[in-house]
Length: 349
Image 1 (cartoon, rainbow, N blue to C red):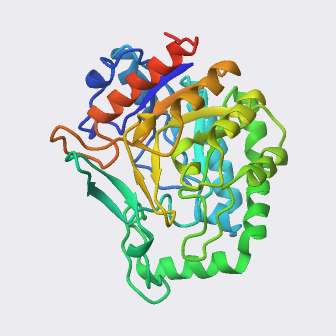
Image 2 (image 1 turned 30 degrees about the vertical axis):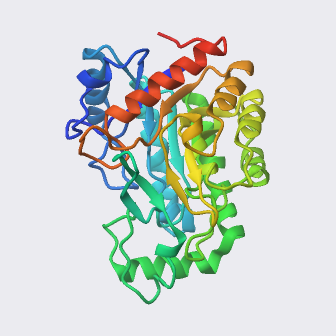
């Protein structure tokens, strides 16, 4: 397995010098952040990231993410141009050593939380989603600004998008996924790149928006659209694990045996009685997921792809991008390393 860590570029308070000191660290997960979605990533920007990582003894070989635009997701007139640009960005990334590209098909909102700094009894803070904080909110009527939502959209644009997705519904979204995959996966195959789809976070509808990458049945449908080793999952245990209906160790074992996991996001989550959830520390006893069973499934099925500790708590007085501080993610990485070793696995240098 290949240990990796997300880095948000030169503006990230967590530096490559910090990351390289985490035991077992190999790969950097990053992206070009200053290009409008739908446009081609400049070669010089991709090369810059690759060179910076190499200077610090790290490898830039995972992209998270090349955004899939709303025009692609909705099947708008601009989608063909956006898909052509998407394919060109894949080619350019592959030229500079990228082997895995993560993306998602979540309508309008990437991920949904109601609070980014919920304090725990030990003084740490983390991301949470509480249903009672969403009660009575209607984005078609109210001005809503939730964490994780794209602030570049005006409220009127958000309402227009929600109406548009309401018109196409789940089946329309599936058709647009199919259209995208049939054009992008052959390019990824040619480039030696695996495309890794991140599940919906959380894995159920929010404000009536269709969300389809949520469960075993739907993941099976997605993987069957283009049956290719380049068509894989970015299996996020915390996202799919927000639903008590998903047996995460079982699903990890199934899709790893099929060789259809390109990237693992490993984190724990605590599900509450009303299915609200809190992001917890990585340790099994801190949440609702059996992290050892998950890692055991990966080792026993011969998973040799990328993994990273996902969202961490803010601890020890650290400030920065919520979920993406250094300290707790480094602890998570060390914990995962220990589980891999204890289960007989190995971490690639």
